[in-house]
Length: 259
Length: 268
Image (cartoon, rainbow over all chains, first blue to last red; front, side, top):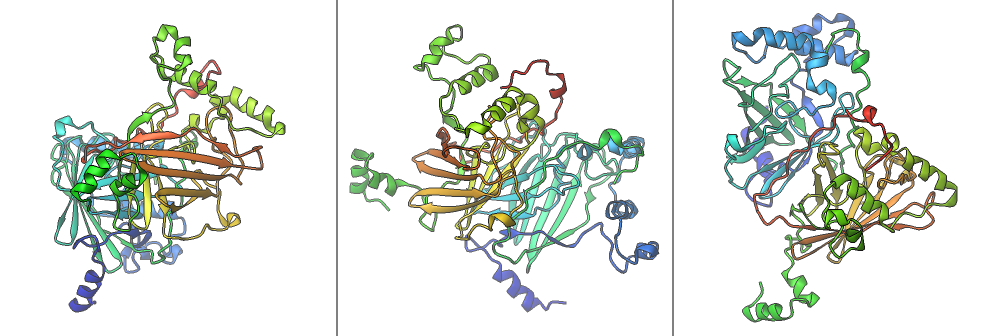
């Protein structure tokens, strides 16, 4: 446990020269607490004795763990069948399986942040297995309000506006399409979805939390698993180039297994 | 801070470069400020009314009605082409003739450097510049970005670089001009339509400079493996979007639906 005085030092050491806001600049590509991944004290690990606590078959084990995660969005009863059907046909229905972008909030915390006094840029590297190509988000922090929802074309990333609440960056996003998913599992959403992300820096950790509000389809807001990224301390660290997405496999899949 | 007298002098002699330099928006480190949305294409490669080509498109009345087809006609009429070594002439011609199948940009692949050209948005800090791109809907490569460090680092040795679409870009300031030096390419991307392939040893030098609210981009392609001499691409000029709240539209993701339905080899 870090004593408060030490924590205070770590936080103040990270304050930006550009203002009194925390400095989020950097390459944040070392995931320390991957939300869905297995902790050593997780009971699931004892159910995977042949793995000896390691994820050998990454995709399949990872899918197993994510399915065992009790933290799910709670849909209104009239959508339960739809979610189940989308899930069962995930290889076809999940847009991420057809080279489409992940969108917000599925794209999660960024791999690199570039911060100025007016805006924050999130840069993403697509995992090779999914290969969506480069993705970025531009999040203004200049105090502008949202465009009225009716004037926004629904998009994958929506319209994100950032503001600081103390040392926490709060990103408010509206204006989505209804094509993207929140995660696999058939977790669709409506165009009225509202996503609130909270990002804060503690030492060299970046903590990302997201809440999904979608009263059209959800019983209550869904708080996604917290994710923590670790700062790459090499000042010359660079992002790898994302592989472009090439859809070769979809027509060859013979099972409905969906990682 | 410019004094009133200085301002008057600038009003009178505003073409004098010293005054232009004094008026240049700058970051705290003294380098020109390239931050902004640069999506007004002031000097596009398309036909101008005084261009003889406009008169040859009489039915268009100087306008480009069929954008893609006219655009490709104009680009093909452009005398500024990369000059390949004779042993590659046949290859270039073949790639060009089969462009719909061969051009990687037709199969949802990234454009890469230098084909992706100047960016519609730049975010600049004292250590790096980020170029953010919006794909044209007709091409739909999805989002693209480049990160260009300006912290004085050296290139990774070429043999240690995996060849990529964007390569490894390093920026430095040559006076008020940003010079971007890029190596470490794959040999998949093209320089433009026309079958303009390149080798993994390609070396691209881009120069960007700001003059008032215009950004001028020049690129030179050096590839002695396949080119007789370096190719200096057509200069492109972008205009600053004066709206401080201007945003980029989201790129459409690329969906390859058309390729298998094309019945001609016409390639825009």
